[in-house]
Image 1: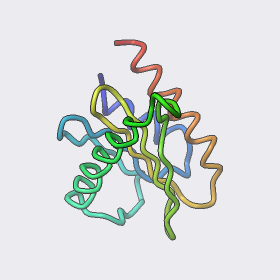
Image 2: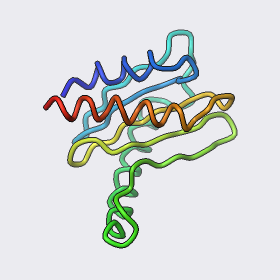
Image 3: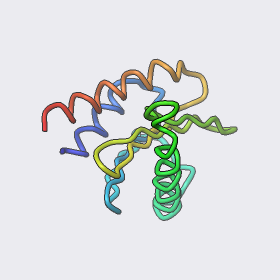
Image 4: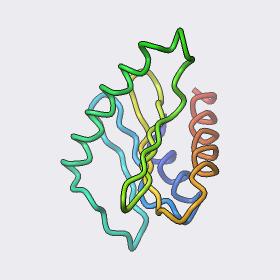
Length: 120
């Protein structure tokens, strides 16, 4: 799967998206919108994604009762943070500005992910 292309397509899909990344098996491929300053260092991002992988594993434990988790959304004082599972143990991470329709962004990012998974 071409993770760089996924990140590019996500960034191109909406100008309110600040950052897109794919984290899979300890490998981080990421892109930041030109002119945007990151709130976290690369090391902090990797640590956060490592923790997010663990949280996804706990969400999966209740899937037989409430369904498979599709994405997680957190609102912080400065950004929205979206995580979407991809592949066996990977995650897509997207951060956006607060003044956006985050549900439209999630829907588009799910479409992008699904298109790439379908083409495997």
